[in-house]
Image (cartoon, rainbow, N blue to C red):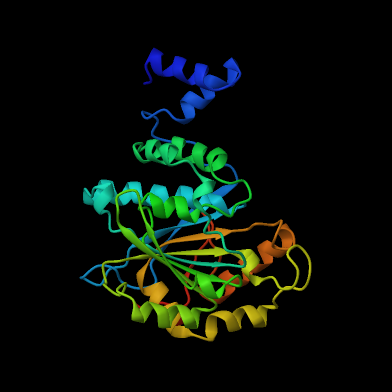
Amino acid sequence: MRSESQKSKISKSANIPEYLLPYIQSMTDPDDCSPIDPPGCYSAYIDTPYPVYRDGRKGAIEVGVFYEHRFAFYYWMKWRRKRCLENKEKLHSFEAPHLVTMDRHNDFGCECDFLEEHLIELNKTTNLGEVALFTWAGLRSLNDGHILPAVWLNTIGDVYLITKQVGQKEEIQCVKDCFGNSHNIHYVKSLEEFARRWERSDCTRPERDIYWDIDLDFFTKGNLKNGPIMSEKEIRKVFETDKEGLHIILNAISGLTFALEPEYSRGLSTALKFYTIWEKIFLKGNISPFGNYGWRSKYSQK
């Protein structure tokens, strides 16, 4: 439980009504075994498409679905916490999974999007309530600055941004994290280009996993907030044009996140339509606590 000095520090350091303090303290209580998940988030588990153990067994990965893209940061931090505890890894030497993100926009962010001292304090906690609260209130509400903070904390390794906002000067960047580790940031236009870039990198070691992140506004066309959308046939073509890129992702996937982003996905119904099409392409059934679902045979290996 928090000490009285910790409680007074909270009440004096923020303009928070007194009646809300017990709820905030409960949310970030390190002794609470069931922290409150961030608002607008839903998650479930699914077997990996390919075996991940030497004896041929598959593992399980968490799928996170949320309204606002910055909440991917919560899941990346959550998964790092779990892996570090299981493998007794230190943060500075954590073998962070690489991120492959599909997004209409460049959500990488810049240094002005966060305060390093705040991230340093966040890095000290193992409390998911604190991570949830920071993700909600501490990251950019425009949902376009959450990747760099994750890189800076060595929560994710190299980044592959499959985006329609690729500039010639942005093809590859190198970023140092708070521990001095180097991270390569790749800007590519397709899964096919991702596969070529991956094969030329040093990322192909089998122990480095991949987080697959999809902002569903990737499947929009035209203007920022209005215009046409991709048909199911066009969406299928995105994934079927280069099977090698998909094989790389699915063979190493250890986490999957979806951002609905209805404001930029032509509304909630359209965002859910995009998500449903993704499920139809890749899964048998739909992800739910009561569903009977798994990867389609063309994307899976026994």
